[in-house]
Image (tube, rainbow, N blue to C red; front, side):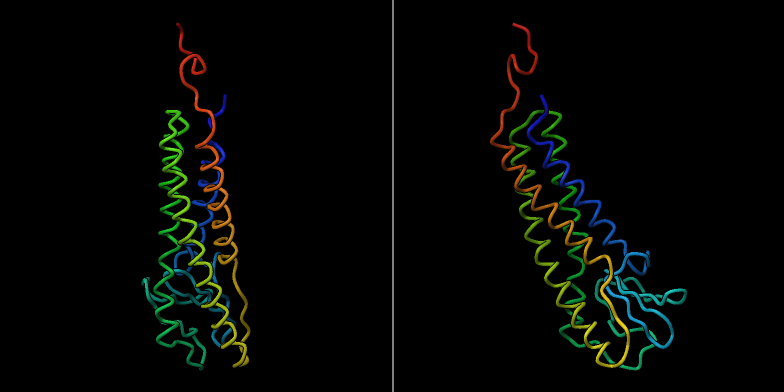
Length: 197
């Protein structure tokens, strides 16, 4: 008999992988980014810890960084947007919460533990709340930057990391639901667990 914690474990793993990819964005990996901006010196891509010009230089890895497009002659950064760039650290934090929930799910599956399943559900709920907050911040921050760039005759479009974040949040919401339902499920004990009497 399969453990009732298996669906929650699967969704926590899916969320962790999606948020890991979203967190390893520029300056570490340019293929996954939140915003692409076509500027005079090339295409600038934005990530959690910085920005890069494709095929060129990158900013230093920082939690908070200057959002001005490299090579653009327009000032995009403001105090509010700079502070919003500081909240991008919530991507790896949400991924870490998904990892902790997944570890609780592994314990729940291996030990047939209802308590570990409940902890997995609570961690998934907390991660879902943080994930929803960061997704809303993502949409506000990157759409404001995109609009400022297009208003100054630069080409800009949202990147794939936004949708990886959305997929991670949905997976974590599903993990929260399935693990809390699984906590009410049947856990094998006694003869159901294969004990001999």
